[in-house]
Structures are given as structure tokens and as C-alpha cells.
Length: 116
Image 1 (cartoon, rainbow, N blue to C red):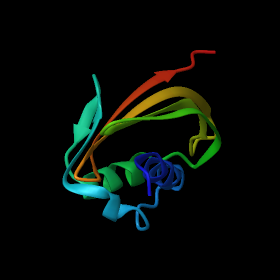
Image 2 (image 1 turned 90 degrees about the horizontal axis):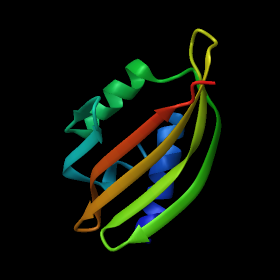
Image 3 (image 1 turned 180 degrees about the vertical axis):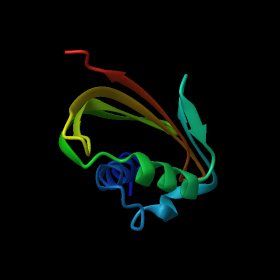
Image 4 (image 1 turned 90 degrees about the vertical axis):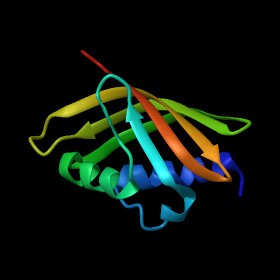
């Protein structure tokens, strides 16, 4: 399986907040970073964060690119989520997946909120 295929599977897991099928793709010293916001340094902590802050549902997601270069995969796109309050939020994202020994070592996620 290519790194790009691994990232596509992980991306699907993020959409439904279910990492049971993809846990083995992450290294033991995994880090998730949202620059300027916060970071987590364990997959269990990421799952807890997502469960506490997950939207009601992903209303729409469009991946524009999945690019693989050496030990990194880059994905970007547009995601619209429905919050539990009913508010719809549209975001633009770019995620950088860094690999080490064929496992995801770090994800850096840049998110821009659509102000319209």
C-alpha cells in the first residue's frame, strides 16, 4: 500500500471519527499539530479530542489533491460540517502527513474558516 493510499484511508477515518481500522498506520510517537491552535502527542488523545469536539456530521468534503513526495503526503480540500447546534461551517484545509518507517509520525493541519 502506498503512503497516499494510507492517507486516503486515514482521511476517511477522520470523516467518521473512527480510527479502529487505521490505528496501525500511526507510529507510537505520533503527533497531531494545528499550528497556532494546539497539538496532541498520542493517538488516544486525538481520538478523545475529536469525540469531544466532533461536529454532528460531515455534510460535504471535497479533496482537491493528494500529493506524495518522499516521506510526506499532502492533502487539501474543502469541508463543510454541521455542528450540533445546526450551524453549518465551511473550512479549507491542508494536511501534511509525515512518515517514519512506513508509519504516520506527524500530521500538521492548517485550517482556514470561510467567513461567508
